[in-house]
Every structure is written in C-alpha cells, then in structure tokens.
Image (cartoon, rainbow, N blue to C red; front, side):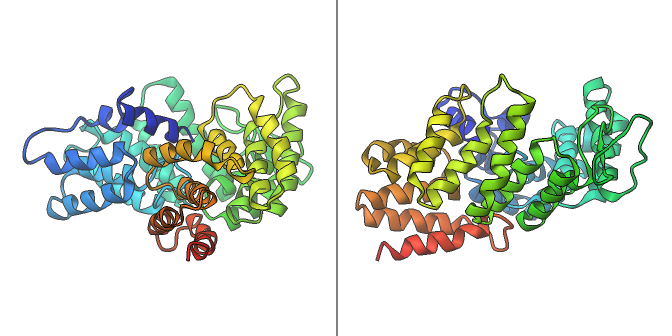
Length: 378
C-alpha cells in the first residue's frame, strides 16, 4: 500500500526510487534502454517497463541487471496488483545466474525477491531452496532469523514441520505457534493462505485458519479481503467485523483496526450502503495512520455522496502517480461520470481494462464492473 505514496514522492522528486538506488542507471549509449526502463519503473508504468526489459533480455540474455529489473516490473510484495509472481520468480532466478550472480550489486536482492515471490505464489520448493541459499551467504542475525522462520513456515504448510517442545495447539488440533526463531503465531492454514495469490483458495484457507486459532485477528482480516477481492462484499463483512473485534480485544488501547474498516468502507461503497459507509468514514478519519489507500476511498466516498467536484482532482493525482492501477483508474472513472465527463470516463475505463493481464488471479475480477461502467458512457 505504501507504493502509492512512494510513487508520488518519486514523481515529485522528493525521494529516489529504491530501484534506482539499488541499480544506478548508466548514461552510456549501451545502457540507455535500461535507463528508460528504470524511468518507467520509477513512474509505476510496469507494463511499459516489462515490454522494454523483455526486449533487452531477448537480445542480451546474459544481462543480469535487466533480468533483476524485469522481476521488479512483474512483481513486488507490497503491490497487490502485481503483474505476475511466477514471471517475476523466473526473472529473479535469471538475475542470480547471469552477470556476476550473487556477487553483482543486484545478486542478493534478486535472490531474496526470488524467494519471496515464489513463496507468495505456491512455488514452495523453489522458495525453500532460495531461502536455504540465502542462509549460506547471510551473516546479519536478524535476516538469518527471518529466513529460518520462512523455511519453518513453508514446512508447516507442506506438513513436514517438526514441532519443538513448547509448541501450542488450537481447538482443532492445529499448531498455532510459536514457529521459527521469530516465534510466529501462525498455523498451517494461515500459511497456505499467505502462499497463494488465488483469492478463492485464500478465502478457504483463511476461514480454516480462523477456526484453528480463535484469537489471532490476521486470519479473519485476510479472509474478508479475499472475499472482497472476489467482489463478494456482503460475505466479506462478517470476517472483517470479526477481525476488528479480535484486534480490539488484543489491543484495547489501539482503537479500531484501520485495514478492517477500510475494507468495510470499500464494501459499503460497492453495495451502495452509504449510511454504513459514513460510519466507516468516521472511524477512518479518526485513525492516526496516514494510509494513502484510506485517502483514495475517502475520496470515493465524496464522489458517492455528490461531492465529485471536490474529489476528482485529487483522484486524478493518484492516477498520475499510479497510471496502471486498475483500482485507482476505476475510482477516477466513477468521479468523471459523476461530473458528466463521459468521454474522459470512457478513456479512463479503457486504460484500466488494458492494464488487466489475461488470467490474473485478482485483477480479473475488475473486468465485469469496468465493463458495466463502460456501458454507462455510451
């Protein structure tokens, strides 16, 4: 979620893109195509970056830096709408095996991104091997503990985890922690949910995780999000309320859970339950955290209650910073339609539809509402 804010800051020149900090572009004629791809990445034009980088690695297949950047263009752990974790894993693996391997400036970051992209997309054997390789080259204690914990979590998912003394079990007999050197409170079903990008599978896994551990709040939160990503907003409300309740019981001084209430607001807006949406808005307005996604949906609420003229300029700035975000473009199109800017809305919707890769596990659910919205522009 922080990607939106980062992209805006990069575009404004306030901060340097982490991609550009890790792999500084050369100004030589040979490196100019990579520099252009890095510029596209910094501007969140991921489809453009993928096209440019695929052309580069086709002609120079031993260019590890280009493979690394291609992996970044396909996927990042903080981009819910990343293009392809599987393609990213393939690219990161090529980055590790070409042009200096782990000794290259991008080598270690590429290996870690290979591990994480693989573990998030049901490539558990591949992920485990990458984490094991990281253990052989890492010396920092915190990173060592993190990698070992990831391996234990993979084993928990696969059913090969050997629980040590002191392991706790939930009411269904599942291990609920502590797992790994970081002593994570987790269970097999929760890990299965974390290790897939398929929202249908994730909803089932997180439902089982919620039953396995009646205390942890993360599982019902993620179940609600998985349902909402399938546009099953009415069904998402119950687990989101459960997550908020568990959070408050565990953290009585912390107040409502921001993400649970953000996803409730999203659902209320999609279900046109504006009175309920107003209550969620009040909760989010009182939250101390400055989350750019909260800002986006507060703007969408303004559009829904007839204040599109106030909201659309800010939504347009979101779209400028995130030109391929289907979610942001959908919000912009709604605002444009509310202002009777039919031609602009039609162009925005077509842009959004062009940003949905075939077979994408989550973005595919946006085709129907976008197509319906496109019908309103004729």
